[in-house]
Every structure is written in structure tokens, then in C-alpha cells.
Amino acid sequence: MSSTEGLLAGRRIVVTGGASGMGATLVGGYVRAGATVASLDLNPVAGEEVVKAAQPADRDAARFTTCDVTDRSSVDHAFDAATGWLGGLDVLVHAAGINHAAKAEDVTTEDWDRVMAVNATGTLHTNQAAFRALRAGGGAIVNFASGAAVRGYLDHGHYAASKGAVLSWTRTVAAEWGRHGITVNALCPGIRTPMYERTRAGLTPEELARHDAWLAENIVVGGRLGDPELDFLPYLVFLASPGARYITGQTLSVDGGHTMMR
Ligand SMILES: NC(=O)c1ccc[n+]([C@@H]2O[C@H](COP(=O)([O-])OP(=O)(O)OC[C@H]3O[C@@H](n4cnc5c(N)ncnc54)[C@H](O)[C@@H]3O)[C@@H](O)[C@H]2O)c1
Image (tube, rainbow, N blue to C red; front, side, top):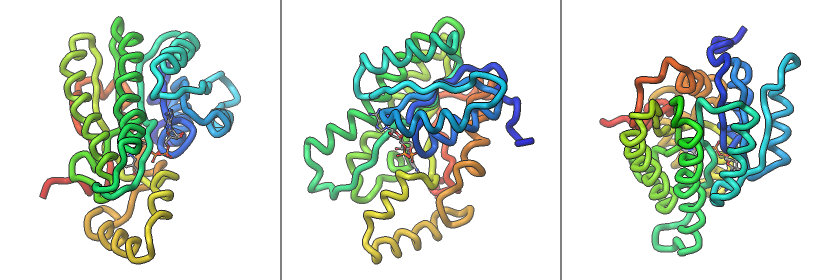
């Protein structure tokens, strides 16, 4: 029996970015913890596979809907389908996002707009859709920011800026929506996922050596990015549970200490 089994019994959860990485971990992990999960993502092939693997034998616990978070009508349709099937909503975990590398002086307007459209505007669309479903009964929203928003991120200025927008938005709507019983928090993860592997693959051997030395120095627990199941999932189960209802407007790091102030 896993340590999270049953903790989310009866919870109705939408996970964006559910086709890969941390979102995919959450689809399977939340179902094992007893929740019913609607997974939304741009990638229907991987998204359906994740849902199929998550499905338990004894109940209809996970469904996938294609959704582009940059497109308001796509988000609204996907949320209508998801909340109709779930019979309401308790939690949105908004993990969909993209990363892109470019030196600050080389970031094009198109690079900037694409990263902002997914990471910042996608947060607007999904949070507003969740608000409409949560305002009557309350619930939780967890947005995915990044340590990049706090510390900056060399050669990823537009990504860091988009995640800075997520942090500021999160604090503001936490203050506005608290009176509806809605908590809103922002997560700064440091977890090994396909996005991180793509970032590593783009580095030269010298850059990779510098990166690994930096991790060894700055990630004070273990010296490397965390494991999705062991280091990330248990915390995210707690954040989706009723026990987290008094936590709001926070920047929450699950990253082995890499964004700590010192
Ligand atoms: N991996 C890390 O350590 C790390 C660190 C800081 C922040 N983050 C953030 O955490 C989140 C999850 O990252 P991950 O590492 O699991 O990444 P990932 O690339 O493995 O997964 C991201 C998912 O988002 C989906 N997506 C992208 N654009 C979309 C769109 N327009 N509409 C709907 N879905 C879309 C992708 O299809 C993919 O399934 C992202 O927001 C990322 O920026 C990750």
C-alpha cells in the first residue's frame, strides 16, 4: 500500500500538462490516492496512454481531453467536458508549460510571445475556467512557476519572465478569490522530467559539466533534480487534499533547497 492511498478519496481534479512529466505523474498518482482525474494536454496520443495506464480496474477514474491552454475557447470547452464528467471540481493543478533557451540579446519577439502564450496566458485561461467551477463550493488551484522566476535563469530570460508572471498572478488571485474559499499557490519544482532532459540535451559537454557542478553545490538534498514519484508526488497529493485549505498565495518550492534564501 502506498503512503498516499485514499488521501484524495472523492476529490475531483483537473490536471493540465497531463501527457508528460510531472503532470503525467500526477494523473497516475492522484488516481492511486483515490481521486477522479480529468487530464488536459495538447498531446492526445501521450495523454490517452497516460490515462489508460492510470485507470484502475474497479472504477472510471481518469479521462483525457485535448486542450491548448493558449486558446481560451479550447480551455473553456475542455473544462466544460471535464467538470461535466467529474460532476464539479475541487482542484486544478496547472502544470502545462514550455521551456525555450536563448541568450537574452537573441530572444525574438516570436520566442517571447510563444513562451508567454503557454506559460502566462495559459495560466490566465485555466485559472479563470477553474474559478467558474470552484466559486460556489471553494477548492484549490496550484500553478506551476519555477525557481527561474525567483533567481533568474541564464539563457532563459523569456521563460523566467513568464514564470514571474505566474507568481504575481497567483498572489493576486489568491487575495481576490480567498473569499470564495479558493486557495491559489505557485509551485517551484526541481524534478527530472522530459522537459529537463531536453534542456540537458541542448547543452555542450562543457556546459553540462558546469550545470552538474552547480546542481551538486546548490541542490542541498542529493545534489541533483528530484524524482517525480518519490520527491514530488507526495507533496502534491497533500496540496490537493482538504488538509491544505489554509495555505494560499504562497510560492512553494519542491526542489531540494535550490531556491532557498541564503
Ligand atoms: N522539470 C522541472 O524541474 C521544472 C522546473 C521548473 C518549472 N517547471 C514547470 O513545471 C511544469 C511541468 O513541467 P515538466 O518538466 O513536467 O514538463 P514536460 O515537458 O514533461 O510536460 C509539459 C506538458 O505540457 C504540455 N503542453 C505544452 N504546451 C501546451 C499547451 N499549449 N496546451 C496544453 N498543454 C501543453 C506538453 O504537451 C507536456 O505534456 C511546466 O510548467 C514547467 O515549466 C518544471
